[in-house]
Image (cartoon, rainbow, N blue to C red):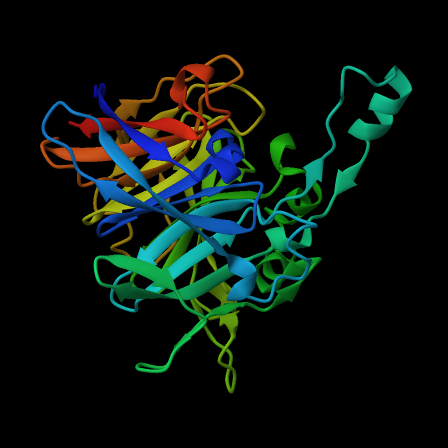
Length: 363
């Protein structure tokens, strides 16, 4: 089983120091590392400075990209988070894909409130319209770095998002017809409700990992193929790719009762970061599905078809692994996985705005 080989120091703008407390995604593209805090409407770009063997890798030169500049968010930026839970890069098309959780949320009980007020809070379910986001944004290389763009005149690429509004989108409309999943749309994510956490690109199709629901121990991945709506440059619709004309496919995985927290590709394999669907600290495991998605049909993948490659350490009330990506760090050797954490432990925080992420060499 793999163990932590090193750490990466992520350095944010001190004015945005709170970003380090809620990292939910990670993606390396060339010499840049893209991360996000799930309580914002931004993507964050850091520049990677590789280190000599045994030294700590540093990522800094922080630049924040407001997604409202490239996409039509239904709610004003200050009013509602996107709850960004997945980013993925499609190198052949030059797009960065982003997905929100698509989940409802239940208000929290607070220690300074009366019992009756807390009962009312726990009875209140909130819809944050920006969470219903599935979008692509052109990625443009500038010297040794990358920036986002609303459109690229040179090749006609444009930012676009799945057709929807503040109450849902075409994906939730389709799931609302699914006898197996539709009832979970009305349940908050942390109550085992519908909750996307994880995104991977497979050719022209996307894999969306669900933290919930977990159905009798089985986790769900959805496969979709977005395309531009006819006559539009900024609106995506879903192709019919599933059985009986469905606009999605369902794939079921035995992750020992855990839900998906993130996805990433490793060649022809799929790596799955799995953790509790409920509000628990752990366990957290990375599974490998060798040759994932070579077949054009729905799959049911049993535990003996998966390899356990990593047990990720977790804290007590902190250090919840939320995002991962393959990481090219000089001198590490082997296949290296970067893991970032929500609710970072105090020991990970350094200075005004720095936080450590972990590197693991996978066996």
